[in-house]
Length: 124
Length: 259
Image 1: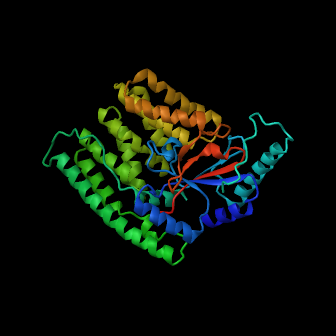
Image 2: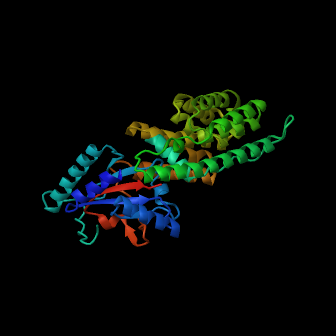
Image 3: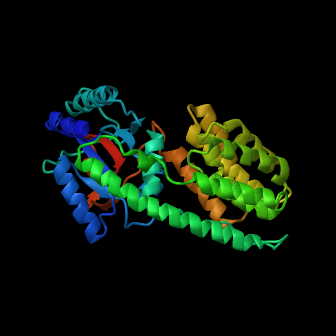
């Protein structure tokens, strides 16, 4: 998982794409966060993750996650387009298609139903 | 994949036991004491196993292994599942047996036959008992172990024929939840939704109603084609973050952990 995600983030860094995690490693505790940081460094995890713990209910509870990892593919308008595509190649194909649509919408090729959201330059 | 994940979760979350304590002693041994003893011994074995499995997993990771070591997949459930079955037959036909059968459903990991046999016993001898409500939620393990039809038959029997409306409601919510989890298309989701919506008319139990509401939230908001609900929280470092911050981009939202 992580090596492929790392290469995906690298490959798509100039595209309208974000990999966002919801991490359940208990980073709401000092030890949990320390362990997370060291493993993230070791594995090259550079993308942001929500902290799953510490809110009631947990994000994973609201999203009714029953197996980990669970993946949601969300398009530029915030609509869920796929769930749980786990094969590396199939995952990339799905993301590429969604990116193509996002880019077309950004160029004004197809007027989006919602107003195009402003790009946030600083986000990874 | 799922099996790995379940084993990994098991590693993370020590089992908790919340089966109702309403036993009346019968026969030579107090069933409550027998149950408590079983749970205590099981918890100890699991806790020892977790320590060992964690150490093995750390070691494997340090050595660059991609897979979890075998021990992490094999919690020591077999012996305790067998013991619970034995106790269930000792109290055969009584509500005390249901509790031991619940233990089997809840804690079996690789014991397929034990789970199938347990579901048969529940269907045959306990489908009319009020005690069955407590163990219905654990029937998910039966689906995982290839007894989907038997599970749905038992839930259907309780949902339709039980005299107590809380038991009916529990059966409906369990069935609705399982069907939703397994649903491959809209029609199957509709069937799950029907179960989940029917609960409001037959029970006032707040916990059951809340469970139904959560499952309906999934149907209404978390399907392909739904607008993703916003997530407002903090990132692992504690900085504020919202899913909607990223609108305009394609997002791969990944529920994950290192473990």
